[in-house]
Structure formats: structure tokens, C-alpha cells
Length: 429
Ligand SMILES: [Zn+2]
Image 1 (cartoon, rainbow, N blue to C red):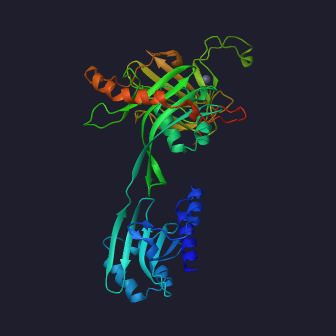
Image 2: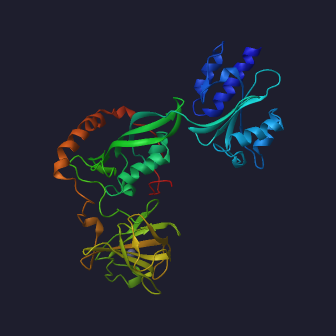
Image 3: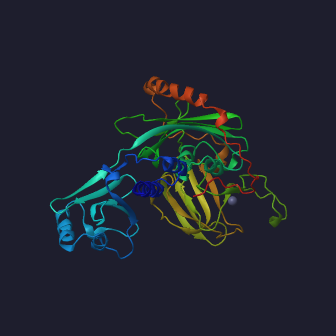
């Protein structure tokens, strides 16, 4: 009977910390004799294990009292460990584990306050010793590879592969300068080599490095290899197979997520509103929801930030260098002032429909030598080319990854039937 109860507790405990793998739990339930289980360095078999969460208004003292620790000892604990952990700081919503004696008293002996999945403060106490310390679980890094195919959007495919949005966003950032994610086509496919980090062998904590990737778009392979050109600076960059940096001076779009190009640069545009006369459109319109953040597509200094009732509405213009400027029109609100320096990706305002416009969009204008051009027709400069002297080292570094990518089996594709979507969004934020 006692054995059964123990197995029951083990199952509860495992379900609490490993929700994603119920099959493991089922297997354990079949085992008739207890197996040794450890967490935070304790052999759990020796204790009654209580997993709970700090409730609103609950203090360390109240919790200890409930688990049969008397107040003189609670006070002793609080003062003894104050340099490691201030017990007044327990926060509602944080999980904790109490290891209590297995006898009928069920008196708490260990309090484990979990800061996150991998770190905790541990307080051990009995009548004679009180000891508090921080514990960090060992993190296991596992290299993974995966192949996926686009049916409606990149994020839908990533979801179907059970990869979380953090990885989706990381890949989107790597390719932000190279790939128009909104233009991905059904049948485009990709392969990734990346890391996952675990604690307790199987509990996922986070993603590690994205080491290499290839995106096949319209039949063309776009490789991305992680490489640190200058070990002293330690800045991670992604390069293609020729050593050209993927990051370029300009982002493909001033909107990161959920946009649709509603009108392109077109010098021969005719609109009904103007009686079908030729009315050139020198911008690219990115339609997005009202209030969507607008990013600077490259670093530079704000040369104009103003409001025009007719025409531009609230708009911002940024001078990037002597050759290029960019301009963003019809904002609901501006976030930057004239003369301010902005970095690539900084939010400079929000999508609206101020000035002469109807739909919610940002009209993005790209200036080269003082003339408006189509940014999508420009061969834009890479951020910084790889030094020639580094090329041999780089090629030696990427060679095994290229082989590995090419060997990832296409059988890994998740052939999912997804109703073709009319939305053109690429990601969920
Ligand atoms: Zn426009």
C-alpha cells in the first residue's frame, strides 16, 4: 500500500514538472518498485514531496507553519539565510517544493524556492542546522536538425513542427534582410541546425545557437551560417556560403510582423480617384493594423519629423548616409524627434492613416542621392563584408555544416494539410 502511494506521488511529481511527456509518466506507473529520483541534489524517495505555488498574500512563515515548522525555527531560518535569500521576498505565483519527513509528522525539512526552471534557492533545516544556498541545475545542450515546408506561412509550419515562436523569430531575424517572408510560396522549404537546452535531461529550457540554416525560396537555396568574425568583439553574424553577410544596411520592411504590401513603387500608376490619370507612386505601401510599430529600416539620424495635414500626415525621414534616406508616411503617432539618432529596428512611430490616405498603412519611401527609387530593385550594400584574410577560416567552419544541412532528410517534412489561407501574415508575435 505504501509502495502504491509512493508511485502515485512520483507520478504526480513527474506530471507537475514534465507536462509535455505524459508517455514517460505512464511507463513509470507500470514499474512496481520505486526507482531513485533526484532533484536539486536530493533523493526524493527519502521525503514526502510537496509541490506548490506561492499564493497571493502568503508568506514564508505561513507556508512553514502549515508544514509543521514552529515559529522559533522559522525565525532562526529567516535570519540565518538572509544573506542568501530574503524570505520576505517570496513572490506570489512562484513554484516551490517542500521535502517533508516521511513519518506521520510530515514536518518540512527542505524548502526549494524555484526562481525559474534551472535555478532555485534551497533552504535545509532541522533542529540543529540551518543552511541556505543557491542551486543551478546542469544544462544539457542538444543539437537538433529539422526540415519544414511552407503551406501557408512560416509560423504555421514552425508551429506544426512544435517549435516555439522564439525560434521562429530567431530565424526571421537571421533572414530579415534576405527574404521577404510575406512572399514565401507554398512549397518553399527550409532546414535548420539549432540547439535546444534541457535540464533534468528532458525538460526544455530554451533554444541555444542557430548554427546553420538553408531556406529554399522559389527554387533557390539561401544559406545562413553562424560565424563570429572577430573573436575579441564576439559579435555573432550570419553569412551565406560565399562569406557575404546576410545582414545588410537595410531591412526589407519597416514592419516586422503582419503586413501586406498593398501598393508598390510604380511610376505609371493610374487611380480612379485621380480620374485614371497617371499618378506615380514613389513609395511602397505596407498595410498593417492601426498602431502597429514602424521600425527604422537602417540606422541614421532623423532629418524630418513633422505633420502635414495634406499629403504625408505624420511622417519621419531618416538620413542614413550621404547616399540613402528613408521616409515613413501616414503615421498615427511619431516617436522620434528631428536630430535624433536611431538604430536599425528602433521603433520610430505607429501605423495610422493621417494625411491624404484611406487605408491603414505606412508609405515607405526610399531615397538615393536625393531621388526616390524602388528599394526592391536596388542592390543594397551588405553591412560589412567578411575580411579576405578570414575567408579560409570561414570556409573551413561552414563546410561540415553545409554537408550536414544537405543530408537532413526531406522525410522530416511535416506534410500537413492546411487550408490555404488568405492572410499574408508571416508570423505571430
Ligand atoms: Zn504610398
